[in-house]
Structures are given as structure tokens and as C-alpha cells.
Image 1: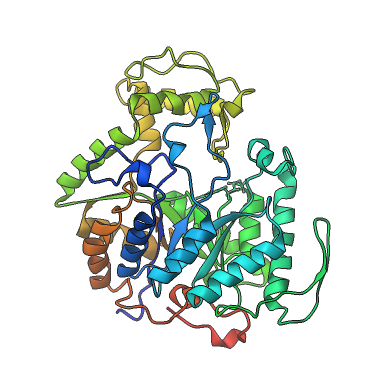
Image 2: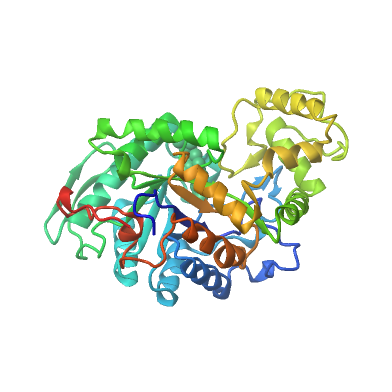
Amino acid sequence: MNAGKKQIHLGAHFPGVNNTTVWSDPAAGSQTDFASFAHFAHFAQNAERGLMDFVFLAEGLRLREHRGRIHDLDVVGRPDTFTVLNALAAVTTRIGLAGTINTTFNEPYELAAQFASLDHLSGGRAAWNMVTSSDAFTGENFRRGGFLPREQRYERAAEVVAVTRAFWDSRGSEVVHRGAHFDVRGGFPLPPGPQGHPVLIQAGDSAQGRDFAAATADAIFTLHGTLEAGQAFYADVKARLPQYGRSAADLTVLPGVTFVVGDTDADAAEQAARIRREQVSPQTAIAFLEQVWGRDLGEYDPDGPLPDVDPDVDNIDITRGRVRHARDPRAVAQEWREFAAAHGGLSIREVVIEKTGRQSFVGAARTVAAQMDEFVQADACDGFILVPHLTPGGLDRFVDEVVPELQDRGSYRAAYTGPTLRHHMGLRHPHAPLSRKESA
Ligand SMILES: Cc1cc2nc3c(=O)[nH]c(=O)nc-3n(C[C@H](O)[C@H](O)[C@H](O)COP(=O)(O)O)c2cc1C
């Protein structure tokens, strides 16, 4: 290992309910077996073989609906996060186990107990991706309707984390908290887990979300995955840390990225084009367009031009239960039209493929490794959360071919150097003095 070189951190996002997962590929597992433990185990064990920091589960508390019907291929659903991660703890030994759990719909006590239990059972490998999504559609599951106005989501999230940490730190003593959202006077039945606090990840992109990450999180999961956008995001969030008494090394920046590894660069490019077309079927292209336009566009030909009509900005909920990252729909529509024209008059499907389906890294293993390393060394990020397109084997080729290239470059560990996820990520134990910061 090159002692002076910045080391790459990798997480592995389990592909299932998201639009980049391809089920039609002969190499994909069966969609109806999606929730079988064999899929999760295969995926996590391969991530561990690749010496990655953690395996990652996203969360959706309700299946997305598009124009009143279950969205696209979401019917496969998601088994409960803690059940899956606790089971994975038994078939892996080193890899971190990261679960996305909402701070809007859960109570600090149960979160503290669930994550502390996962940390104990796994020998210090638990991580919590704290999300704040609070749309009314999801809220219906909790009989709270549109529970929490947008501006209060991070206020509640900060309080959830404060109370949860108080439980983790209590070591048998009384926990007393009085705040806007919680009034707790109690006690916690578990000693701190091996990590003291499970690793905390944050994934919202608003200014409030970034501040919450800077104040609280050990890692931030972002969609700013290109070199330039990554560098701007990286500088922004790292600059927010000092005001919370923290330094740049306390927050690991991990964009979610997609990849295609081929025999040669040309082979990978060919595969990438095929995969993008599988990810964006004609029906999917129209559904994407309807999400931006807020209108029924079922009459439009996916192989024809973009609609002349403007988006209906009052109807942004045409897809319910989706996490919205979109900006002003009119601006997006205008940008897409200009993009189509600038590229010789692209069709609806071609525009959607280019705008939503482009893979982050495409090439032979050596090329992919070189590009990833360049991003990390150029401070566009500290590593990546890999989002493969195949369940369950989407990591296999990356582990077999790209990981050794990263190791040869001196940017990636040759073995795990400690037992806990905090060790893998180079994070200090929360109960240790500042001078004892360990490195990966
Ligand atoms: C990369 C990324 C991944 C996310 N994953 C999830 C998820 O799995 N489940 C979820 O409910 N929200 C998820 N979110 C939503 C955010 O955590 C957050 O609730 C949402 O973006 C709104 O917050 P904001 O206004 O700060 O962006 C994700 C966001 C980002 C950027």
C-alpha cells in the first residue's frame, strides 16, 4: 500500500427497487425471488470478498405509485431492513451493515435498541443512513397523514439522533430529554455496542440536509457523482464542518455511482449502451417523462420528439412515494428540449436514456479503476457507493477485476485492518479521546 496516497472507501448498494436494476438480463436473478436470503447473502459476501466498507440497503416505506398504479417493477418490494441486516451479520464477518431508516416515522428508543442490537450481534458493523423523507403518501402508513412540514424534518431528525445517542451513551443511567418533539425520562437496557455509536450516514441534499450531515454524520451519500459536481459538493460539505467543531476527516463523502466493466473499453461501451436501453424501456421512458411533466403523456410515441406542452407544475405528485430530487420541472423540460435539439433531434426515449441512465464509469477494469482513483485523488469524493444493475451478481466482476487494479494503484486496502466498520472507515470511536483517531 502506498502510505501517502488517499485511500478509496467503497460501499455496495443492494440493487432491487430502483430504476437502474435490470431484471430482463439473462445474468439477473429471478425477480420473484428478490427477497430470498440467498440474494442478499451472495451480494454481501461478494462485497466482503472485495474488502468493501459496507453493504447498503435503501428504504421505501411504501411502493411508489405512478398515475394510480404500482410504479413499474416495484412489485418486488423490500423486506424489513433490520431482519435482513441481522441475518447478514451471521453469514459475514467483517463487512459493515448499513440500513436506511427514516427519522420522521420512528421513535428514538426503538432506533437506539435496533441499531445497538445490530452492532452487538455483528461485532461492531452497524451503520444507519438517516433519511427524513416525509411525504403525505408515506405518512398514510403511520396514520399521521402528511406528518411534519418539510421545514421541521431536520429539526426532528437532529432531536431523534440526540436522544438515540443519549440512550447509547447512558450505560445504565437515567436518560432525560425535553425537546420540541420528544419528552423522554427513561433508561436503556443495553450497554454500548462495540462501535460506541453505529456509523451515521446522511443522504439529503438541501442546505439543511448538508448542515445536518456536517453536524452529525460520519458519511454522506450523495448523487453528485461527476468530477466537477463532485468537487463542488465536496468543498461545500467539508467547509461546513468547522462550525460544528469537526474537521474534514470526520465526514466521508460517498457518491452513488453506476459502472460497467467490459473485456475492453469498447466492449464495455457496447454493453453500457445495451444496459441503458434495458433500463429505459419505451414504457419507462414515458413514465419518466410524466414525472417531469406532471401530465398523462400516454399518447406520445417514445420514439418521437418531446412534447410541445409545458409541464403541469401543480401536478408534481403524479408519482407518489418517490423521493423527489427534481428541480423546477419547466426548467428541466427546457433543458431536455435543448439537449434533444443539440444532439440532432433525439427521441423521448433517447433523451431519457441520456438524462437518467448514463453510467458513471464504463471501461475495462483498469480504466474504471483509474477513473475512480482520479475522482478520489482530485477530492471529488472519498470513495463511492456502488449501485450495480444486476441482482444478485452485480458486484462479482467489479470484485474480481477492478478491486485488484485499485490495489495495484496503492489506493485500496489489501486486507481489512480492524474488526469494526469504524476501523474500515478510519473513524474515531465516539468514547475515545480525540488523539486516538485510528486510520483504515
Ligand atoms: C443518494 C441519496 C439516497 C437516498 N436514499 C433514500 C432512501 O433510500 N430512502 C428514503 O426514504 N430517502 C432517501 N433519500 C432521501 C433523503 O434522505 C432526503 O430525505 C430527501 O432527499 C429530502 O431531503 P433534502 O430536502 O435534504 O434533499 C436519499 C437521498 C439521496 C441524495
